[in-house]
Image (cartoon, one colour):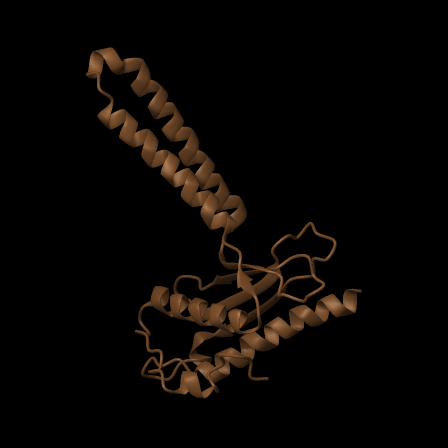
Length: 195
């Protein structure tokens, strides 16, 4: 099933092939994550940037605290209490940011809203793993709100990256798109089975 924007479309055919250094697992994971996101977007899902915006606001607050501590008009002995307060706030907000990353974000590469016209009340949470010294890439699709009544069981695909790349490091997009589209279909079919 070739979705809108799939590699089988003429608009994508004119693009240069996606190539990566096969000795760089981070580059491989990044390319596969970006391509998986493209497949999800081609299915009508829109990215949910709420968590990213919250992290940016906390980051701006942290920067503001650091700037206030650095450029406070009084010199050191006089601004001692102010600096202590800034240090405490800096640590608190950094811990909050790390807590959000550790508990909410985890391995998530993409959070989406439900597709328009869908009866689902939650979007997707796409996560991936490519362990060190391993060629096994795992892509997982779950509900972005697991506590929701419309949340479906998560589905997972684990496959060797060698199945999607040529020996020269060129991604065989058609194969990867088919695998990701099948995974999305498996997830949406789970929702229809559970109702």
